[in-house]
Image (cartoon, rainbow, N blue to C red):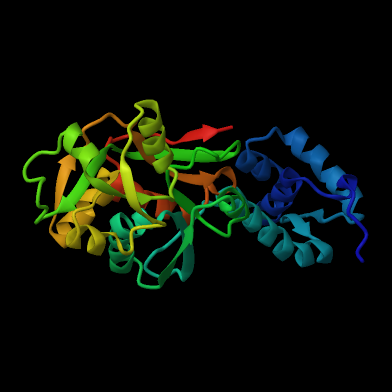
Length: 313
């Protein structure tokens, strides 16, 4: 194991720049002008450099300051060190979607599989041919996955995220009801009386449904639920072939209705609206690839121009 280097054993950047300038100009005066330093300061630093390296480095001759063999040997290392420092100082994160191979993982709900994922996938395939996408469900592990980098972003309603996460609002959701196109009783309008007289499908997963259940409890709505579903996979087939109603967020409701010829009605009672956001951990806030993916989601779904990310510090 190598012994740790003490700071007193290291040369500072200015000393290495001085050495390179003296080697290039062969003159204390010209090196001072090149570095914007006073000539006595250059002479003092050169003396310190000589003591540190235990070599004269440059000797006066009739043609100027000539390097010693040690200086000839060190100049390449000095220039490489300066170039590395310039690269380090000027480094900027970069992500080239045309060339990069990257596997992004997005946490999202079942509803987002239907409403958001197709648009994200189509856009990514068009601009980033080597990028692969993966989807992870939103659950209690979501904060850990974002923090560890096992997931890149999460999209949805995720109120349980704590400190150290950024969020950006994308769009607001209200609620609608779906019914079969051939529903025997509901034709053009859904009233509260009709809502209460019909049977319903209940969706029992997803953070947003806490808002629906809270509204039903607050307003003391007594509705008959005859079928509970954990997600949306079988919902269109059930609604289109029965007289059951379902209450769900507008985005997923309109998407399912358009694809399956279902009727969409305004919900006849108030349910709290919610905002769909994208979330990411502060560790990856400046990461170029993560910023690129977030930029795609903003471009596709952001309804309010200039929406700045908020940090839960």
